[in-house]
Length: 352
Ligand SMILES: Nc1nc2c(c(=O)[nH]1)N[C@H]1C(S)=C(S)[C@@H](COP(=O)(O)O)O[C@H]1N2
Ligand SMILES: [Mo]
Image 1 (tube, rainbow, N blue to C red):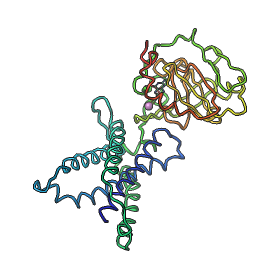
Image 2 (cartoon, protein in one colour; image 1 turned 90 degrees about the vertical axis):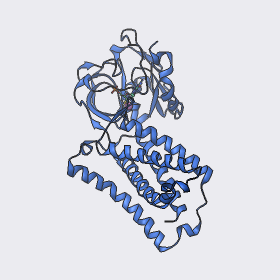
Image 3 (cartoon, rainbow, N blue to C red; image 1 turned 90 degrees about the horizontal axis):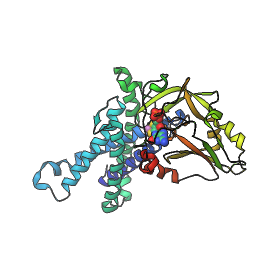
Image 4 (cartoon, helix red, strand yellow; image 1 turned 120 degrees about the vertical axis):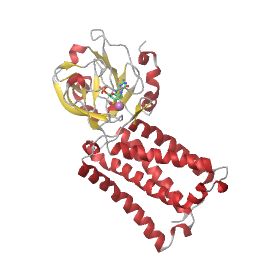
């Protein structure tokens, strides 16, 4: 392939990897498996393209005399790509490692964002326009097609090999997560987004308030909520584990019926005492659960006592813990993304 087509294809594959990677952080519905498959394929395309590019620039790398100012950067970038791809592939195959308190998947995510930013800067500074002659021609076409099909086929092949060799990667969920502590009540792992660590909440004085686009705002005590609705659901953390539990509490639809929605209500936002918040479309919120218990035990502090959201099909990140307020909204809430980054710095989030 022409150098320019290779470079633009590299950028394209990186863009697909970035987009699907970001979506995969929020989605956990089995119907969305294609997002995860595309992410894997984009990684393999990158690998094949990189191979082609390295073969081309190899002579310029190995002969010190041919180095110029940019060569060290090029080498560093290559190393970055290899480590990012390697961490993803290694994780998918079932490997893990703990480095500076973060696991392999955490590192893959961080490296992915850094790499995407680096590629964007590089393209802005140095990208050369793609010309007709970079794309036309039967040979080019065949090579490009072979690359696309090859990368796409390598992905299921990798899965098949994992199954055949019985690698631990074969046991993971379609999201890449490993099973941990299912049906063990409060004993399953707990994790917090960044560092949310509020003070323990006293259930006697705690209240859940509901406001926004409702007919009659009101507040509930703990005893009014600990009802017998049950929901078996999978908490799938973007940190790489999942756990299935039988959650108990109250269906959110019941609460919404009690306060009555205004006609133009669209989203339901769940707000933690730490100020971390997330919202669901009304229909999905209705089917979700506000959990007070796992099996017959009240939630432990770390799992969100007294009240946490259980939202099947959404990543664990969205299952707000230590809820104190529900706000019914008429429009989406883009600010919730920011709360991901600020909640751990609020006084309540730090436990003051
Ligand atoms: N308020 C609040 N809710 C939160 C978090 C947090 O940091 N603060 N972490 C989220 C993340 S990233 C996950 S995976 C789940 C973890 O739930 P668990 O600790 O019960 O396993 O809670 C979610 N809810
Ligand atoms: Mo998480």
